[in-house]
Image 1 (cartoon, rainbow, N blue to C red):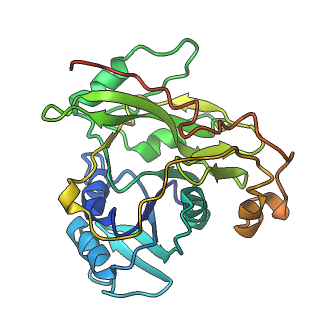
Image 2 (cartoon, rainbow, N blue to C red):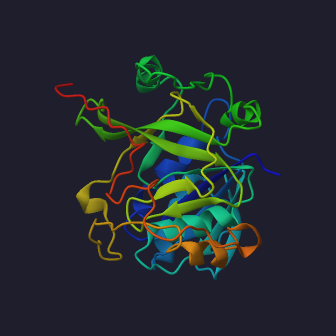
Length: 289
């Protein structure tokens, strides 16, 4: 079994950043930071997708137009590209993506994210930042591959929380807003993505044993406005109350619940906030820097 799968979803509007994001994971001093890439593609411009993959170092074997699924290689790392029908539901798209992956651990990233290099000053700043009381911290050593670090974690640990520099200061790139997000999970069939927008990854049985890795830093680098390709219309960023019973068809439909089990109980979940941003995303606001 592969150790780590990188799971990404993209449409026409996000594909312009894909090559940059993939290179940040694959072109690293210690080697690629994933063993496979699973790309859920909901766009229409296949040519733009193929061009970005080629910019990232994709093997020639990826065709200029493809069917429901294609397999290729990017800088020696296998990639599975599968078509997704866009239904304005980010959680459903990510759930399908996670289920198709084969790694013991599964990590997600957006096309406009970058995995910071070990020598990036932002990584050291993140490692030295004050930790919440009682937090389990275990940064990746600069010389180690992420996969090696994951293999050394205790068997009961199933969730890695990582920092996310979401808002960066123009010119300097210093973080104005840093969030902490569950970023990598040891896969089992009870992990489920919830909320159509500002989606959240949860364990349906509430069995999360987390460790915080301050060195696993992702940087949010959205494209310039004129880089966006015409794609699906933007949808309103509003989320209603969530219940596991409402999302049970997603679990059963993707074989994500053991033996097709339906998640309960019905009604509003106290574990998932109805607001757009989940509670565990703790923003560390920095002004004037």
